[in-house]
Image (tube, rainbow, N blue to C red; front, side, top):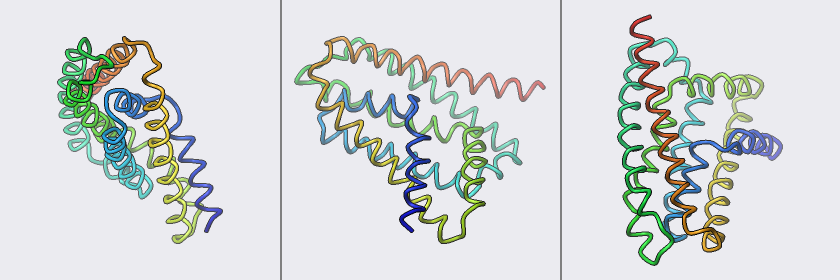
Length: 209
C-alpha cells in the first residue's frame, strides 16, 4: 500500500512541478491575499486539479476524443470565458500593490484567477485526453486496489505542492519589490489571453478543416 502511494506521489510531483498556469495562479493568489484566504483559494485550485486527475486516471479523455461536438463546444465556451477573464486580470493589474488594503483590492482578481485555473483544466479536452493516456497507461500496470492507493498518492502530492507554494510565497511576499505583483498579474493575464485565443483558433481550424 505505502509503496503504491509513494509511487503516486512521485508522479504527482513530476506532473505538477513544472511552472504552468495552475502554479502561476497559486503564486498569484498567495501574493494577493492574506495567508488564510490564500489557503482557501489553494484548496479550490487543488480540488479542480484533483478532479481532473481522477477523471483522467479513469479514462474520461477517451469519451471526449470520440465526441467531436462535445469537444468543440467545451473549447469554444472555454476560449470565450478565458479571454474575458484575461481582460479583467490585465485591467486590474495596475492597481496591484502590497498595501494593507491589498486583499480588498484584489479579491475580484483572485476570484478570476480561480475561475481561470478551473477553466484551463476543464476547457482543454486535449489535456484531458493526454492525461488519460499517461495516467491510464500507469493504471494498466496496477491492480484495482493498487490503483486506488496510487491515485491517492498523486492527490497527496498535488495537495502538498499547492499548499507548500502558498505558504512559502505568503511568507516571502513582503520582501519582494512593490511592482512584483503587477508583473505577475500582467504575465498571468497574457498567458490566459493567449490560451483563450488558442482554443478559439483550434475551434475555427476544426470547423473549416
